[in-house]
Image (tube, rainbow, N blue to C red):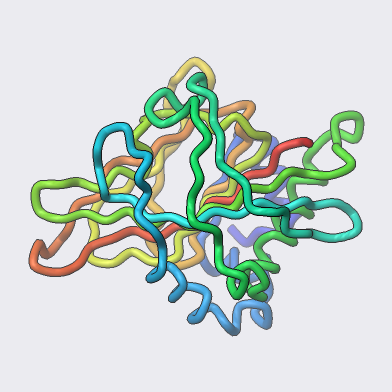
Length: 240
């Protein structure tokens, strides 16, 4: 279907989540705002290794940034650690994790500006007025999940989970020589509600984190002789 912000909000309100394919995301974000997509996507080639993986894996690379979003605009916060309680992340939670910051160039990039602005407009309108905060705490994660022969890459090593926030956007940036990586959504009783695979750049999943769990299956290479990876942008909104 073709989504407007209003119809996308209605879909998430009905199901607790929505899959939005790349053409619809382009329409929501704006063609002009996406003209520099190439330089935005290329920044995933410069991510640091995530050294906090409790499973000992070195298959995940990432950068991280925080923003404050309100009616006056979206402003980047000083660099800070990412923290999740073990209630939400039993594998890697419970500690402050200091990741390399998103570069200043990407932090000010017009594509990112469109993604953050559209997400803010959507999530703010979906939050009941009585619960709508004066400002949102926004966290931005650039992820690359790598896989090689004998080592699957795990987008969600914690398995089926919630993030402990209000709203989540997961947007695919690139899939290179990988298979699987299927996203499944579950209700709070852990019954599956739907599944889909983000395959094309700008395919996206949007989640009401208070209502559903989500998880992604491991990725493996099609051609074991070539580099294989899955690049995604994850944006979360939490009431301050």
